Image 1 (cartoon, rainbow, N blue to C red):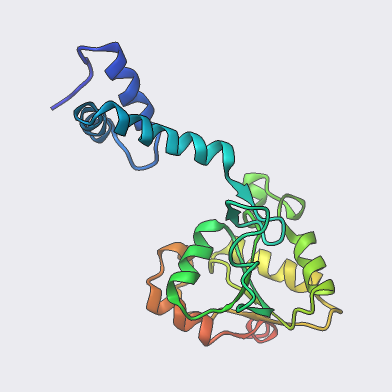
Image 2 (tube, rainbow, N blue to C red):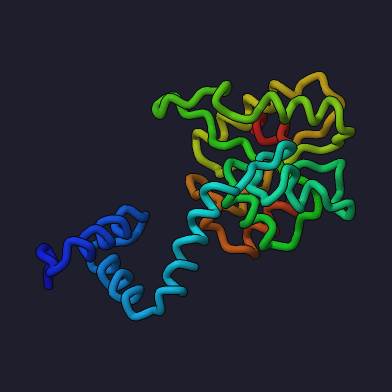
Length: 208
């Protein structure tokens, strides 16, 4: 059944906005919009205000670039974390994925992407300089490169490895329990957790 013509412009506008969300087609958008109409006005206002607050008030941790409610995120400010080990990830979703494994107790560094010339993303577009600064100044002993095992991820790994050369730090990479070409966020928690625990020196990965 098609829903090309709706009886209300207001409903049409709501459906159009929901349809802009990833993975939401027009049929699902209509179902969501009609669901909101069944709720009390106060509930709908609370729903909308939550997203407005998210967009206007969310911060990015000045240390690791993870999202946060405060200037420094809860992970970086947690004194129980291993401050000598940094896990480098592509994006915020990857922090959540690694945290869900409950196999890592160090700190993170979010790059904000990977090197991808086809997409116009170069090293200067990523949070690499701040990573080098943390390693040089904060007593970091190990950097775990936990990027997706794609061509772009491997290119970024090698670039970071070269940037850290000369610093007194061990550079390792997650084990290839995550299939080559897979995105890290789609790996199951057991596989990802084992990949963290069974990490290998990065130098070995480029000499094979």
